[in-house]
Each structure stands twice: as C-alpha cells, then as structure tokens.
Amino acid sequence: MAGLEGVEQPRERGSAVATRWVTAIEDEQTLKSLELFGNPTEEEVRLPSRPESAATARRLTHSVVVRQWALSAQIAENAVLLVSELVGNAVRHTGARVFGLRMTRRPGWIRVEVRDPSRGLPCLLPVQPMDISGRGLFLVDKLSDRWGVDLLPRGKTTWFEMRVPQRHSASPPG
Image (tube, rainbow, N blue to C red):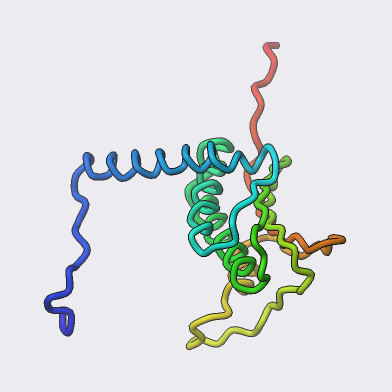
C-alpha cells in the first residue's frame, strides 16, 4: 500500500478458531458488563460518563438485541451504532458523572433510552459531505424510525425507536 510501508496491516482472520476466540472474548466482556452494571431491559443501567462506557453500552445493546430478543444482525448493528451516538453525546456534552441506559421492547418496536442530568437539548444540525463531526443525531434521524427527547425534572432522556418483526407465539394445538 502506497505510503503505508512499515505500518502493520490488519491480518486476515481466515480460521474458525480465530473467530471463535474473538467471540469468546466478546462473550466474556459482555457477561462481565451484565454482572457489573445489570441488564438494561430489567432496569436502567447506570454507567460512568467516560468515553470507554460507550463500549460497554454497545456490548449490552448487542447482547440484548441479538441474544435476548433474537433480532437480526442488521437491527443489532444499527441499534449499536445509534446507542453509541447517544452515549457519545451524553459523555461529551452534559458534564454528567453518570448516565443511564434503558432498553424496552413492545410488539413491533424496540426503544433505547439514554438519560443524563442535563436539560440542554441536543440539536439536529445540517450535515455536509466533508464534515468530520456533528453527524450523531443525523445518523439517529436516518437509521431510527422515531427519536426524541423527554425533559425530566432533573435532566432528560434522549431515545430512539426502531420497527422490528413481531414475535411469533406458538399457536395452541387445535
């Protein structure tokens, strides 16, 4: 690659062993996150307002969407990206010590909420092709079916919702 001589290049992961090893590490990290912080479908998970908490929020979101709710990889990918954007905004712009993550599912929809103690409203800004920042809410707007902000007595909840396939319940024997 021109200009990249001497720079280590990504290696192909051509073996199933490497894939299983990476998956096992991710599973272990996810289990640790669930044990340490809790399950965001059962109660609000409170995370420290630090950049590394975005990775924890992504792991929790992916685990819930794929393992608990058994939704598609594409839905999981979009939900993980959007939760990362909301968490990034909460960490960068609110001055909070902690933020909350909550996930709910109802027929045909999932909802992800990030709560912080700031009452400052996020702004959806116009995005230009060469912009290097400010795309977070633009992505939330484009990839979610609905999003918004609920002001609270002390802070706000920024949320997004996505349409998902309805759960199919087994029909009773007839």
